[in-house]
Length: 250
Image (cartoon, rainbow, N blue to C red; front, side):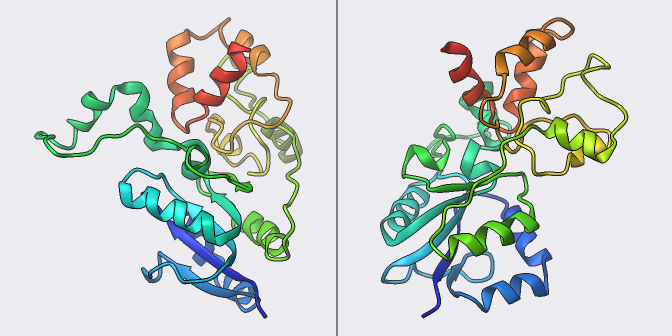
């Protein structure tokens, strides 16, 4: 019997799921190994009965329906995976938490009566998460690598090293820290092949922190040439600020 998997969308732009479709034939070859019981991007279905071997969850649990769906798939799944930055770290939507919920919502809704405006929270605030596939969006290559282990009932191990190591391997010449610019590559989880620094953009930590990251050391360096407000605003973009604050408070 093939492993049963589901790919579930909460509130999100479904960018990580589009990455899967961008894999083309390779993604559909992977699907030949499994029984895909739900894929919200293609067709919205009622969560099927019975156990599901692996459930991949993308997005933020914002609405009551989101939270209900998340808890339901957790009960049915042997392994639940946070798919991408929004599910794992709160993502860009989490910026609302720091900028004032009431102020932010008025940019879209002039009349906010009866409109729910909850704080943005990662899915592990509601259910147990067994594994995270990081990134904004995720890497299709990583998905195939990890998914092939997950459907066998194995929890993969992610190499714990910083994005800066990939900058070196790529031969990226311009180090932002050396230029006294904000960059979180020293504390951010590698695996993205340093795509942002390689293309002239600072690392904003969309993949989260790697284990044993020297967070306080990097903050001390940044504070020597950048003001605190600018550092915090950049930490807010992909939701890594919460994890940073927990470490700093220890």
